[in-house]
Image (cartoon, rainbow, N blue to C red; front, side):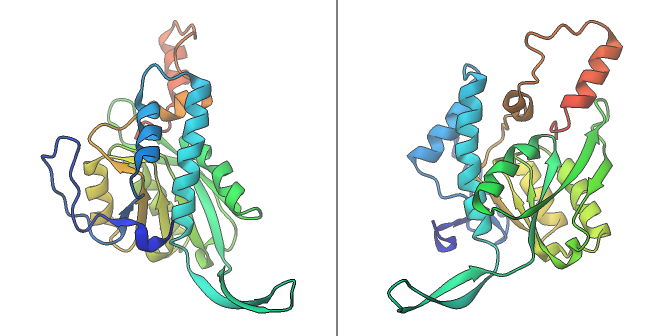
Length: 251
């Protein structure tokens, strides 16, 4: 699946209702759609999907998105010697890449990245959203010391408004990461979030599997098994603490 096959959303995007055409620019790309991808998206949206199935099929979609996101990284030419002694002209990743996951749902994508890049370093950003105002604030960030010199694969599966990602990118910029060195890897994105991000960060690359008006915002809770179902939460204090701990992906 090469980058030449990636759908550039700058041309047009039509929703399932065929009633919307949006312009997002050349840096927002959608994973090429096929029956397999559509099935994975359908399973993850189905309320009847069990948690074990949800995690299994989410990991499959994550792997596809991560693979295509890595295809946006720079390569350099190289020559290797085959076991028969022949010379082969190929490609290799340029050095200086790292991953950053936005806690908590972004952590679901870390294993997919490690499966593709065995020794890649991964940082973390924790962003909390106010339940009433939906205002996001960064409460924790940990990066490689030389992150300003690296290409950064920012991982966050669900984007409804884009507010959480905006805060995360602001922190990366505070650490002198160049906007053009950020690749946002995402599973589901709403048109509002897409428009917000490409307007705020026109030099950043975005790779998603789908742009749709309805995003599965329970992704993190379902993936990690931290939904309210089966949990006895009685007092307001318990509810607040539960939400603070497990609702970081309510973008």
